[in-house]
Length: 203
Ligand code: MN
Image (tube, rainbow, N blue to C red):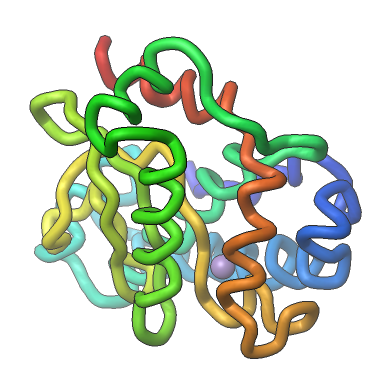
């Protein structure tokens, strides 16, 4: 079974004014589509064709750079679209809110740490909120399309929130102002989905 590009769960203009329609069209329709196609081409005719994306990510160090880049790109963008929504933002509730307070001191402290990780990632990459193997939270960032599910990742865990800081994610609207894009991102976060992913790591 080849991996498929799922439709965006909302309209291309639904995240405006924070993320513009043209960026979303190109980001999903061109970039994410290309990662999906390139992943399928890279695993075609190999044992990895029948594996889940999580199994592939856990083994990318043994496969190839093409699979590492494109399996990451496929997975990371699926996560990214799901953890955003129109009229999002605010703050998490319930168990996730408690875990954030316990780990970072407060939601504001967590925002600072996550935003700094996103702003200081040199070049292209992602910043993450992860659940580690012992069920604590951590913030980290990764280069290119790497993510914390990969065997090659320095930072290990299950990502439940991520921000794409590749220039293709913001350059049309924000040009070189990555910090403005990061500030805007807090207004489109789908905390219900982040909480759902947090709870799912405990099962
Ligand atoms: Mn991207």
